[in-house]
Image 1 (cartoon, rainbow, N blue to C red):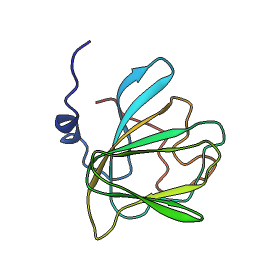
Image 2: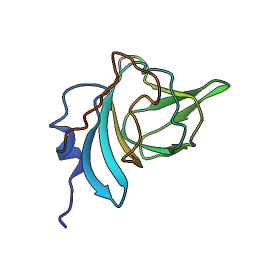
Image 3: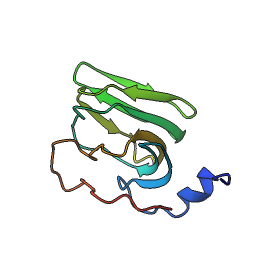
Image 4: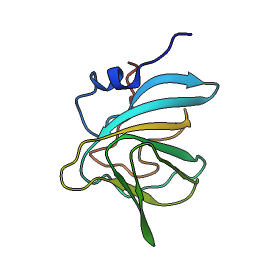
Length: 121
């Protein structure tokens, strides 16, 4: 039960698209991720995902539109909704995610960016 300095934790994350767990809340996990470029189209059949932008601008692509999420804002992607997070112009974006521990990184999609381990930092 100590404060977690999110910005300090990001100094330990050097790779893009590899989530790191910083805390758990019941069956939920708090994750930090550094992203750059475009991820992979995917969905989570049983879990919602919350994305909060700590630094930069997130472009959350849906099949019918793109939502721009600025620093200090968050977006919730409901379960079953196909989405593809991305950044523009080579920007390094820092995210905090809140999701169930059972959430698979890329849903049912297997991709070279798929991670199965979320290191604790």
